[in-house]
Length: 107
Image (cartoon, rainbow, N blue to C red):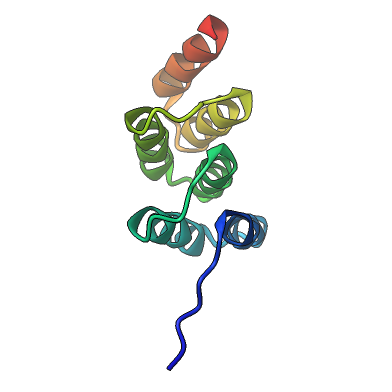
């Protein structure tokens, strides 16, 4: 039995592919595995996962990921916050969307 190892770029490519394919669960799982296995996650990793969750109306998961970025002192850029706003919009959470909009305006 072989163990497949992947680096940040490979994992990000897989996460982006899952996001584009509408596979939010796999995207979320891959991001979680990256964190658990100490593969360096970056803003690209989280942006793709937040987008995937948002596209599937899983706004709670998207917000959790944004919070995880903050806990790990990761940069939350315009793409991150736009994805979070879209996730909240898709979930009918306009008040939370406005909070992310305010964060974007302050940065």
